[in-house]
Length: 298
Image (cartoon, rainbow, N blue to C red; front, side, top):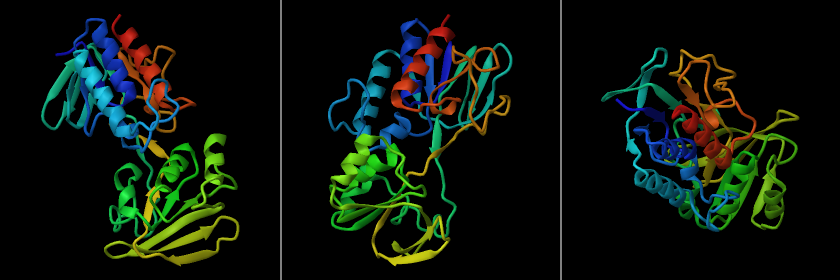
């Protein structure tokens, strides 16, 4: 039995845990993967107040974990498979245990969106769906393709350009959707080229990616490029991890909340990328966690 259970150990969940503990509450964070969530996998953390220049997602995640543990927050690595949110006492079930608390904070974020293209499943981890922070050095002197044109995609492309022979950013719109800072850096990076109005249509190979198909958004024409041993890094958006929250009404898969981060069910809060919001950044996630935990502790 806990005072507050938090599902998810990204910046939102960690923030909630720290603030709950500061109010004297017995807080538990359940996380199926690693502390840090998606931000823990990025090459560098940018624009967040207080981070060191060039700080990696891994280092940032380790700081989150250390701070939470030092605050007295218990973190358990288990996958939540079922929840019962209605009633005075909420129940959270994993494959190993059941946990109870009167207050629950949902902070399990989003997962990368799949492209649903030919070869995606067969070549995943074999040159396709790679992670820049983890795999960049593997592509020293090789060609890589970054799928996506938002901030996250372009930031990783800039990091990969330090290692790869050539980086191709593939984006389906007429211009990159990233901030001006990143656009300017792309222009100044000689080994980055941009393919706009283009989608990745398929990847082919056996033990690695040997060729790629691209489709033109305007004409529908398909172009095949042979590039054995290249790397494909996909940053094409995310989907909310809300499948198990069947007791809640969702808005396009996301959880609506009020200004206190409370859902339609009393005692149940949703924070970070999983909730309905316009801006999804580390700073807004941390803010959500702070607000939810303070109100849940009242």
